[in-house]
Image (cartoon, rainbow, N blue to C red; front, top):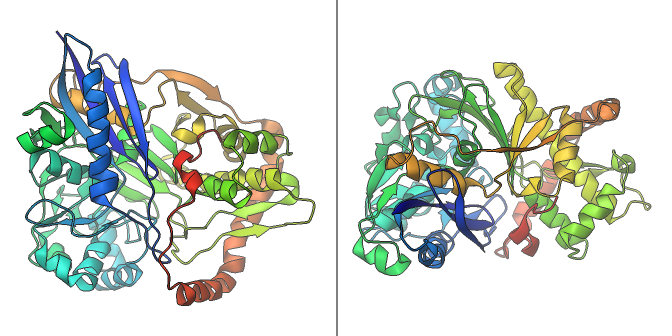
Length: 515
């Protein structure tokens, strides 16, 4: 009898699941699209019961029957977007919408308040960086103040993957990696909760029990088995935030290894040889025992390509890529500042807005799409430069995510950044890394196993270096040059937005699939 494990990942625009053998062979996979809600400027939410748990139930019911005859399902592990916040009641169900990671900036006032109260130096020393929209602590304080009825009914709180674990097992636990993104509640030095700071944020609401990402937290309950089709008592491994789990599945485990994820947002994770505090990058616990990482991410990437798709009439990504590929590098003088959802690294400004500069009557849809990809790449270049400053130049970047599949986006990124990228042969995503955690957690493979298989190498075109260096200077000047003006526009947006948003563009269901 052979073993298979199940990895499940909940992303921004879809959830995916994969059955994998202990040697890394994929048996079967599936996905389900969903949408995040943007009910107010700066807010980004999901329905944890429908988009998280509902997707897990549906995917499990689809894949469990595909376990080959004679094999057995030996473990399951979730990963998910993060850090996110969902309050849960005594029945384990969500008490309202889940507040999403750094794309949600509703707690800006709490970020400022806690930052001033605790002090930048103390925050950097204990948490690895200052507070921003990426930190979960300010969102907890926001929920305590702005959702008092739900707060009063809450038994505890969860992130995305730990919510799924709780629904599968009934156990309240949070992995150390996700907890390390809950600043200022977690102390990176001691790898535990900062009880003295936590009480100012959560009061008497219990802090979850801390576990390792590859720990077996519990087993599938009878009720969860009836819903999902998973075997009762199946071991459930904790999991972690999707970008780090995807890095694991892509073989990014050694100090200096760096992953760049092409998804709804762009995100970079580098394994550090030890605890390094390099603001404005985020320092976090790694997934392997005793390790640390540095990370940074932009607020838009594939979500911008989907916006362009919808804005220009809903053409297929294949058509947009073909048109953009026919446009010369530099998009004939069109430059996009891709801050359509504010920006995280490096400016950390939730009130930043997108800018299209150099627009003329001769520019068309292909120009806009190419300029969007170049704008995303220019933002990524700023993030990667921060890694160089922190740890020195890394090996070739490992590129993952849906945006790597078409080739144009990755080539533009290499040309803009001047960096080679390796695109692994296996491109399923974080669900593949979650399956690896499941296999490690129940001892089917030793810790440190690498399932990745290098695929194609994307190298920069040296002839474009001068052009993109010039564009990088223009790009860097756009934000400070427009910040005051877009601040006025942000005020207009916030004062005039009284109706709940309909969600992300329909095209987000295929974010960056072929870019």
